[in-house]
Image 1 (tube, helix red, strand yellow):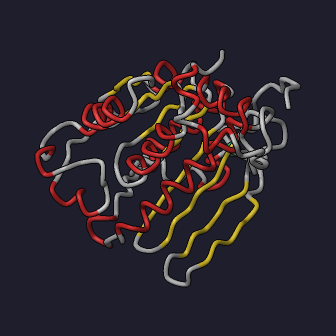
Image 2 (image 1 turned 30 degrees about the horizontal axis):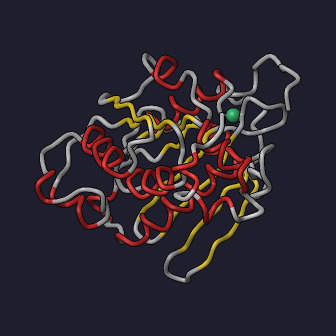
Length: 262
Ligand SMILES: [Zn+2]
């Protein structure tokens, strides 16, 4: 694929970067990213993924917009309150760039439907609000061989990591959190609070992390850093990186047949 002359100007500031370049921009244009959750993490992520010219976005969310979301989910407006998040987010993308393809999935992902929905993705970015979905998404990504960018937030703390549990020696998200959370809903924002600007910071960090994966092999933005967790402390502020070990007994990634791909 190539980029049409009328779109070259739109991405000129990317193309001039040696770390992205024309080849990298074409790779972004060819990419299909599935976004799980169009809330605090998802809404800033999708703004920068769309702005980066990601060719196809699938937006997943089964929730509707609440007035309390507007403090941090800045793609939504008061007139959107009560409307479905995924469809409203898709309308934002269509207004922003008619050249992007956008699909809507207005259901919650679980073990029963994740395989169908995530199949064919080049990358999944998970910013959803519960562990059960996160673990189902992670296990499915490993099975399908799709890299996963995962991002989470609470109060002033954020976590972002890329995982490729399908590759030999690489941990998956389940290696990180274990099995205890399979059925736990962890949406603690309502009780604990979260600073709006923090979700913007973590969501855009996640979008850039996703771009590292999509550009690997096409441009030199940086290593995907699979299996490294970035802990973002908004109060200090600081970012620390921790290496996640592969769990040799992980039920998500440990018993896969080795494909030999690296
Ligand atoms: Zn694992």
